[in-house]
Amino acid sequence: MARIVILGAGISGHTAALHLKRQLKNEHEVVVVSPNADWNWIPSNIWVGVGKMTTSQVTFALAPIYRRKRIDFRQAKAVTIWPEGDETNPMGAVEIVYTDAKRQGQTELLRYDFLINATGPKLNFEATPGLGPDHNSWSVCTAEHAAKTSEAFAEIVAALRRGEKKTLVVGMGHGSCTCEGAAFEYAFNVEHELRQAGVRDKAEVVDLSNEYELGDFGVDGMKFSQNGYLTNSKIWTESLFRERNVKAILGAHVERVDPDTVHYEQLDGSKGSINYDFAMLLPPFRGVGLKAFDRSGQDITEEVFAPNGFLRVDADYSAKPYEDWSAADWPKTYQSPLYDNLFGIGIAFAPPHPISRPRTSVNGTVISPAPPRTGMPSGVMGRVVAENIAHRLRTSSTTGPKTASMATMGAACIASAGANLRTGSAAAMTMFPIVPDYQKYPLTGRDTKSTTGEIGRSGHWTKLLLHYLFIYKARALPGWYLIPE
Ligand SMILES: Cc1cc2nc3c(=O)[nH]c(=O)nc-3n(C[C@H](O)[C@H](O)[C@H](O)COP(=O)(O)OP(=O)(O)OC[C@H]3O[C@@H](n4cnc5c(N)ncnc54)[C@H](O)[C@@H]3O)c2cc1C
Image (tube, rainbow, N blue to C red; front, side, top):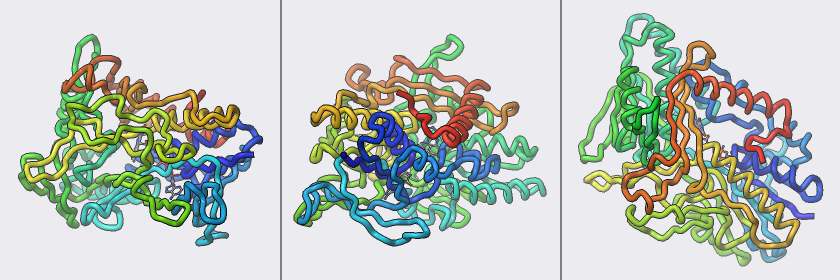
């Protein structure tokens, strides 16, 4: 009987665990290690952050689901990987520290035949002085962060109702952030709720982003047809900003967040600042800080992980100028080049380079989005890696038949404002592929290959439906796969 250990129970890890169980039944052991008791449907945190949902509406307990699925759940965090085992045993191992009330702080060395790193991001608030809920700005990255943010937002709405004027800044807290789509979505939820509360005219809503232009979304923008017209995501997003009177500060790296002022540098090297009453700024991401040692106890963290802490997989990491980037640089199997039983999926794998054109300010500060790894591709990676491991266990081969390159995969993104069937609207985008074929469409970004954009109700309803499917169906039917076969 083989043991497959999955680190992380987010979108990619949970999907991998369910698919492994489906494929392997009880012939092999599936173990999930994750520090939180609950699963969080992160995309709905934006609604928690404006007070339209509670944390319990966007989370569910993992233990009962894994018990029913006969998946061994350890509420713990992984700290160290021993891919070659140690001097006592050549079998790979991962050291975990329990976080549940009963075993808090206890450590254990878990042996594995296959290890999937699906630990997502470390929210790196430390990269920017003053950033984050422990300091001067708010976040919607976790359900708990979003709940605190909603309290601050409610105070702002109350002050606006008293006739005060307020400035709300939403966006990216560092020049190298990713998830521009999430900040965009939260900005338009804030705007929507201010209108619903009848106080929009007293509030200034400002989007502060590291994107070079609106509509970049960390993927070099998109071109698509809407109502028979060919347009691009820049014009499309700009028109939405104009329509809803949301201001934008672009090409910005936040240097510092003071209690009432955000200080930033822009691509032209100029320094600016904006006074705020409420700021929700996302942090940059890095790997969660796992260490790796070889059999003799030598530290091999730098070989196994990239400098940003994400796991190196089957990507081409050679440094190349933007002009030479290729779709072929992107990983297909998410297998470590050093250890064929070690995988990195979702946000935990190290991308070979950004998707958007890299930019630095005249002072040399990096101000361009890191590549987004959104929910849909994260889930697909989880499923494909699970299926390849199952295949390997059945056939004893060292590779699996399936691939999931972001250069051959599509993604749907819905930025939905309002959590109500009647009053909300959404900007819905689909793109295929996520990573454009730079060689085929050099320097023009993504072509019209297969992208769509729509602003309206149907995308909004889809997003609400997704929320209920993910939360309620996953609670009620633990065998339901987030990403189907
Ligand atoms: C506010 C916001 C809104 C978003 N909206 C959308 C959207 O609308 N659509 C979309 O497609 N994507 C959206 N995203 C992105 C989406 O949430 C991510 O793509 C997705 O969560 C990535 O999945 P993952 O499994 O890689 O990481 P996560 O879902 O973050 O899961 C990581 C897991 O690893 C666990 N973990 C952390 N450290 C350790 C450790 N040391 N050991 C073991 N386990 C560990 C965590 O507790 C967690 O369970 C949004 C992101 C944010 C922040």
